[in-house]
Length: 202
Image (cartoon, rainbow, N blue to C red; front, side, top):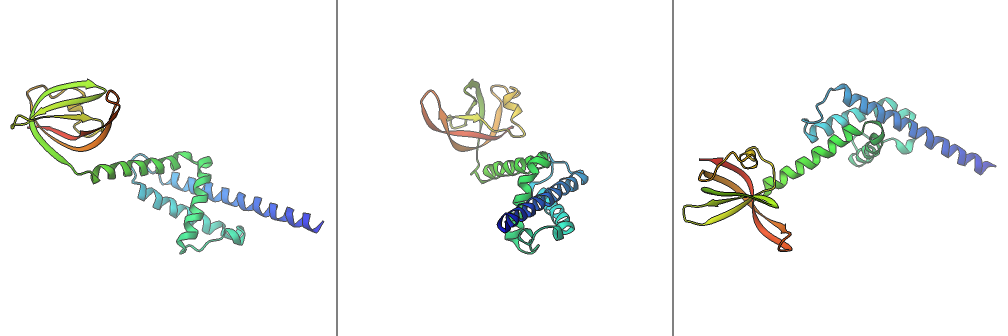
C-alpha cells in the first residue's frame, strides 16, 4: 500500500510539474506576442534572445512551484539550454508560428552563409543566348572569344534580368558566379557548372 501511495505521489508531482511547465510555455508565447515582433524580418539571434528573456521572466515567477528536479540556475548554460529545449518542444502546441519563425530564420541564415562562403568569380562579355533546358541558362562570349554557360538556380536581386528576359542578346554584361556540381539528368551524372550569383548590364 505504501508503494502504491508513493507511486501516486510521484505521478501527481510529475503532472503538477508539467502543468507549471505549460504555464511557463504559454506565458513565454504571450510575452513574445506582446512585443509585436515582425517574425518575417527579425534576425534569428534577436528572436532567440527575446525568447530567452521571456522564458527567464516566466520561470522566475513560477520556479517555487516547480519540483527541485526542474529548478535551474540562471547562470548555468547547460541547465538553461535543457530547460529552453523543453519549453521549445511545448511551443509546438502553444505557439507553433514563433517556433517555425526561429527555424526558418536559421535555415535562411545558413543558406546565406553558404553563399557568402563560396569563392565568387566574375566574367565580362556579350550575352549571345538565353535558353531553357532543365535550367535557365545563358551564354556569355568573352572578348577572347571564349564562350561560357551560366545557369540560374538561386535567387538574387538582379535575377529578374534573366528570368524575365530583360537583357537581350548582344548586351554587354558582367556576371558573378561560382562553381557547383549540378546533376545532369540527360548525362546521368554530376557536372561542374557555373552558377550565377549576380548579373549587371555594362
